[in-house]
Length: 93
Image (cartoon, rainbow, N blue to C red):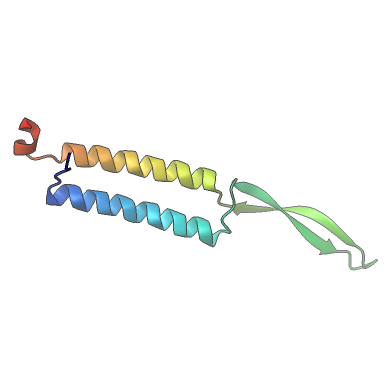
């Protein structure tokens, strides 16, 4: 079965795929973490005694879980829009 798409449907699918690609590039830029983090452990040095200690710092790191959910939502929305962009001839088939 060959899928026949009109020009509007192709544009919609390409825009959706570009959003998904952008989300993956942003995920890689954030460090390609599997899970989203809201705090990151950093090592600090005590100025008075010179000892090192670890402390949590509030910092958002995008994970694959949010990226996958966003990509899935964009995929569903793009497919729904493409479905409703069918022409009259395509609806009869």
